[in-house]
Image 1 (tube, rainbow, N blue to C red):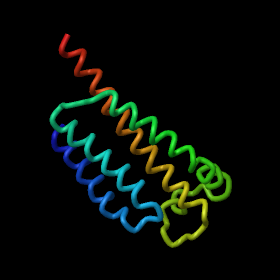
Image 2: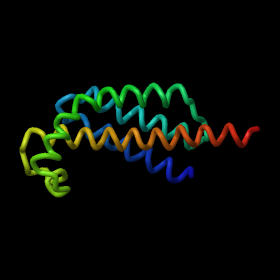
Image 3: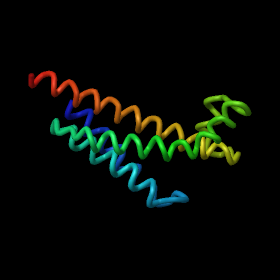
Image 4: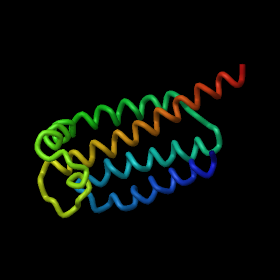
Length: 124
């Protein structure tokens, strides 16, 4: 598990560094950096459920901003190739990509939260 957590942390650190060129760099550096910190803590079996829960709520709330772009993508061009084609400049695609990224972050947080509950069961 340490290797997988290390890889997750490195991926988020790389994306935090690449977020400098995004339209809202501070927000995305904080999102990817906080995900990296959670993955580093998980590497040492140190799970803070309150931090994971608060981060999940923040990401879920921020992701609701991009939900309209995701709905528009689902109606107008629901092909996976259009979602990941960077040359396509339809405005709703950026929102759909951000939404997918945030859902992926939320799924990782859910996995870490479940692991923290398993850690409690093993103690007892």
